[in-house]
Image 1 (tube, helix red, strand yellow):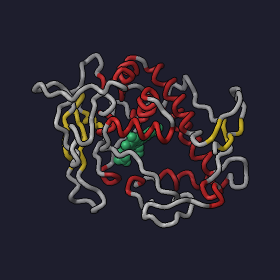
Image 2 (cartoon, helix red, strand yellow):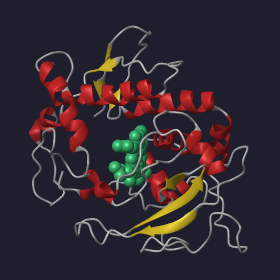
Image 3 (cartoon, helix red, strand yellow):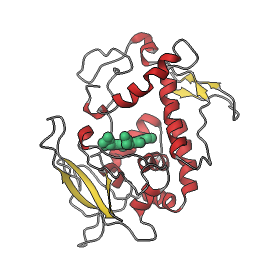
Length: 287
Ligand code: HEM
């Protein structure tokens, strides 16, 4: 939890702690319960419950039980001890990362291709950004229905019946917050009285944002979202067509999102054999 990227995660960890405790010594590990929470929250947010997000694969080991307790190195470079709030350091993508960084991160960590990256990022159809957590300021979230898991995120990025929103890059002033939280770049547009916000990582799915090229180290960008002065950022060729496809079909998005989420919550394990609906199956550690 010393890694600032993990700010705010104590809220779901605390929330799930009593459920984890209740299952101690039983069939579900803490890791199983955390991953189940990802599926349950998707199912609840996909409020028409057309698809369902069944939790069928169990058998994840908690990090303290893996690798004979050798947890690698923590955020500060010390030997890590493993537990619900401690573990080995992982270099994560940031809200300020560009297109190639995002694609490479998901490929390296999860083996995802461009379509799977676009589908999983649709989780940002739900929720919002709180300045006190990481410095991004988006109380209205990414789309117009931020309590519902739907394809609104893609409609904002690719445009819908009302045209393509003209996102503008602004810098959030966080000088009143702790030193850990720098000023943040974010893309904003006003729609029907809501101020929608996208991170560089979201815009990077439709516009090719490249660190050291059009994306500067201070988070500023040298091109525009839309063609204001002949200076539109180039299209993100690997991902933009998937964004457009999901903007046109809620069903396509939800079924691809569910597939990507199922892989994500089984990452590090193999789902061997068939696991028919309604049954519970054991994962095998992928060494
Ligand atoms: C490149 C990868 C990603 C980056 C950089 C990123 C970044 C962020 C940031 C900065 C926030 C705002 C946090 C806050 O202010 O409280 C956020 C929120 C959120 N993210 Fe991501 N995210 C990424 C991928 C994902 C993925 C893969 C999922 C799920 C499958 C996800 C689900 C969410 C949700 C649901 C919220 C809203 C939380 C809330 O309202 O409390 N994100 N993300």
